[in-house]
Length: 126
Image 1 (cartoon, rainbow, N blue to C red):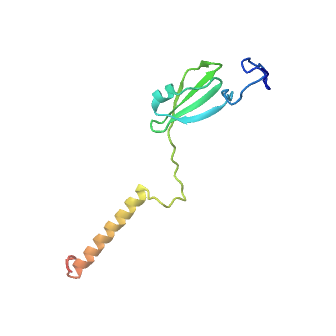
Image 2 (image 1 turned 90 degrees about the horizontal axis):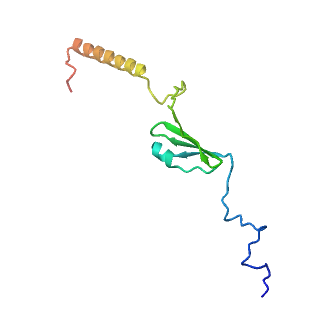
Image 3 (image 1 turned 120 degrees about the vertical axis):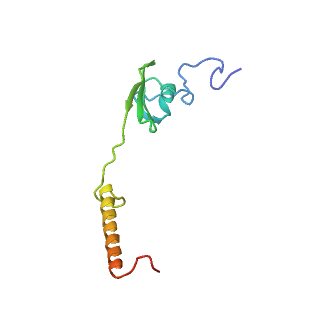
């Protein structure tokens, strides 16, 4: 029996099936969200890759590498969010501004009560 593409039971060393071969990006770096150090330890890293594993809730991240099939030690880091005050931001009030306004309102209330009292009222009449 003759086969148009050769003997199907023989392996042809020049033929490769790229769809079934794992794709590898040597030297790639990516970031993945995990939950805690246990999640970072459990995350698999392919050979030749480095991954930054980050947990925003704990404020930590880890760098995990696998060089030529040899896993490297898990490096651990902490981070803090730096919130900078924007002078153009008018959407919030500082504590000093609130205290100054509160003091002004208290002074105005005292002056109104004094004026009402001088005019012979009690300030509670309707």
